[in-house]
Amino acid sequence: MISVLDETKLPREETYIEVKTLDDALQALGQMKTRAFGQVLLFFYTCVLAGEIEEVAASFKKTRPTFDFFTLAHALKSATKETSTLKEAASSIIEDLDKKRKVRAQRLAEILPQEARILTICNVNGELIYLYEALQGQGKTAIFFVSETRPYLQGTRLTLWELRRADIPVQLLCDNQAAVVMQKGLINCVVTGSDRSTDKGDIINKIGTYALARLAHYFTIPFYVLTQFPQALDIEKITIEERPPREVFMWLEGKGPWPEALYPSFDIIPAEFISGWIDISGQVRCA
Amino acid sequence: MKEGVLLWGVPTGKGIKEIKERTQDNRDLYVLVPEMRPYLFGLEVARRLTEETIKHVYATDNMLGMLFFKQKIKEVLFFYKDLIDKNFSGICGSLYVCLLARLHHVSIKPLQGEKMVRPAQAALLLDEYMSFRCDDVLPAEDEAVPEEIIR
Image 1 (cartoon, chains in turn purple, yellow):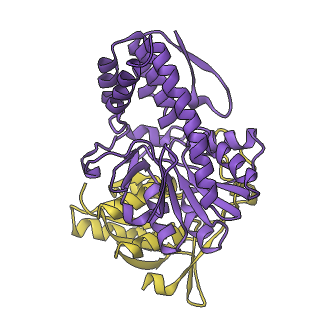
Image 2: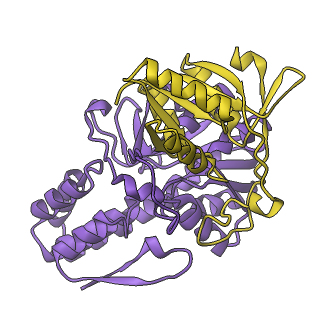
């Protein structure tokens, strides 16, 4: 059995759901109980301990089509050649990734301004805490401006929650306030994660990221992206997940009936609007 | 999805009439209503459009970038509150929408909108519409959009 933090209940409650079967896992994934890249990766590696790797990857892919579970499966298979059990292989990948994320945060901190005023969107699984620690270690100061990230409010419910718990200076804004905070000079850089990326530098990330990149480009504010496993592929060929439109209204319970709605979950951000990429090995590439 | 007209701000009765005429003239035209955080004016606009039997589609504000990028928006009807010293004053997010339109070469038609006012305490992002509150928030204020961005 796996205990999974139910992210849809945050920040009001920290509750865990029990996952006993692959069907339970797929349901948790489909209902966004666990959702950002880091959490999904951890969840995936835990689920493969109880099932066949390729089958779990295919099932996960069907539920969340934009994520690249086959690369994760391949990495796990490769790791099993150097360990005696699958569990050891999964643990070693997860521990290794965490170490790499700390290094990546150091590299990013090196290129951020002395007084970093960082706009971010969605959630990068605790990595902003590593970034803050790295900035402090380098004698820099930082405040985060978190875009609320409608409709699921990952910025509000996860990033803001994480940063506040760590006593890190943070301010929340509506997604549509991004232009005005850039115009007023309240922020001097943008940092986001990426769910997918290509060797050409194009990325896919949470809906709303494209607008931030485009506006940052207009205001000549650097836009930095944390990437995982860039691939040689055409970004346009990646399926963009469409979530059920009713989820647009999920935090507005009791005020229906609701109008017809759209809900594409992810944006494509062309490389031309990105200033720098910091990959999981800590390598920094600037445009 | 075909090309649409994006509404930003709260239309007056006259504005609603113009939208209705446009949809009657072009049956393929869809009307896109953004959420307009933090006050969710989009829900009020959607209600008014429904009363006038104007078909529309709702989206969150952060989806607009993608819709501009995919060329799904051919015009923005910007219902501003005031015109002061060559700046159009509009609801929170007006600069975001008008700049994105400009960057994607989409025309913006300014129209006098309603001057919706919300009490100060509702300026919190997670206001009475949401099920929880938050204090570390950037105040939601009207925004000035320079005329050169619109014209």
